[in-house]
Image 1 (tube, rainbow, N blue to C red):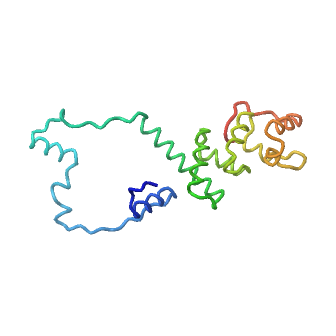
Image 2: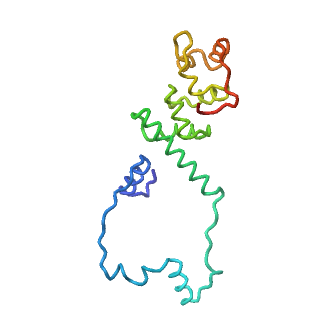
Length: 186
């Protein structure tokens, strides 16, 4: 975390990362302040009036530079990181925030949503097995295939011993056909 943050800001940030909403306190404001004319106008209108009085034309104002990447992409990625982190915490509550963040970033790089990650983890993969999920997706396996049994042993358990190619070969011999278009969730 950033060393410039004080304890309260760190607590608020930790709560937001954990998905907890901050508590709202009811504040009482004097009647005169609530009804003041300056509070009833929009901030843009107040700034416009102020600039007209001070003679500052709009052209001289400093502009805020646009970021290199569209803000929606960064927001979507951050939201996906947080959502996948929550899924990992739900599946394995013993994980540390740092480890969850690292694993969530690896799953995001696979371009999977939180629901898709949840499907893979619920099917038996561990949060650290994102590469195994990637190989399964590439070979046409889905989370639903992980629950199938080969000689009484679940596919997800066979993957750890036989590898993805070995399991796919066994499944094909038993009549399994890969998904037409590999998807991340069944």
